[in-house]
Image 1 (spheres, rainbow, N blue to C red):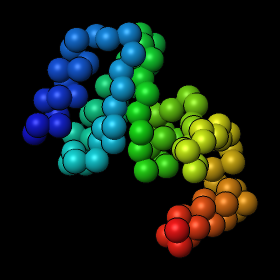
Image 2: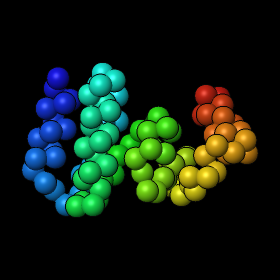
Image 3: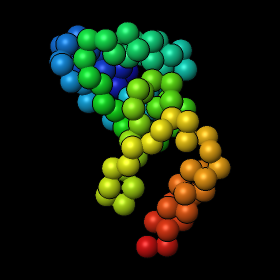
Image 4: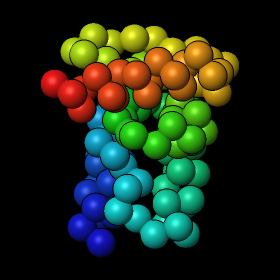
Amino acid sequence: MKNKMQMLINIIAQPNILLLDEPLTSLDVVVAEEMKQLLRSLKQDRITIFSTHIMDLALDLCDEIVLLNHGELEVVEKTDLNSREFKDKIIAALREEGNE
């Protein structure tokens, strides 16, 4: 409930740039879908930047996707997200992090 209220307060304030960290993680399925619809409707009026580990969410809501990899930002083409090469690269990076 607290996350829902924070999200709504941020949206009601109508900032030009909206920064969200894992905006739908703690929401139930119905509310998450409602929030996704709301975020889509806000895309015309402001810049929304959010972080997520859920790639399907990023594909669904984002115009541009950027990954943070070893402290570097990498722009990713949406068409690359489902490629075997991209998935292998991500898995290798995660394994490397686990061994550090």
